[in-house]
Length: 114
Image (cartoon, rainbow, N blue to C red; front, side, top):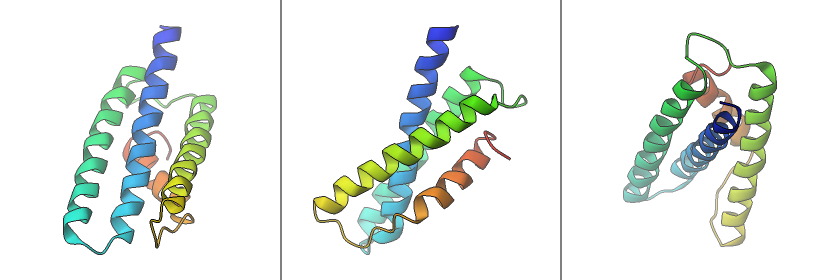
């Protein structure tokens, strides 16, 4: 399952990046319609990430430390990159310091990190 496992990890990471980015955008926008949109996007991505998490390793068992480190590092890098891109496009009020805090919460929800 080595190659499939790596593919599943990358798919889970992509969805986690989406969750983090949309949660931050949800906190920064003022319009209720956009907030609802970002909330729905983050919930859908979180559910998809949960399914990938189950396929990679049952929730009752912890992921290996090297996988946890890879997930955290990759999500932090890609989420910051995506938010920087949005800032360059004119998005305002984005607080990059929230990325790590939100990621920790999401990883805890997925039982990836205690």
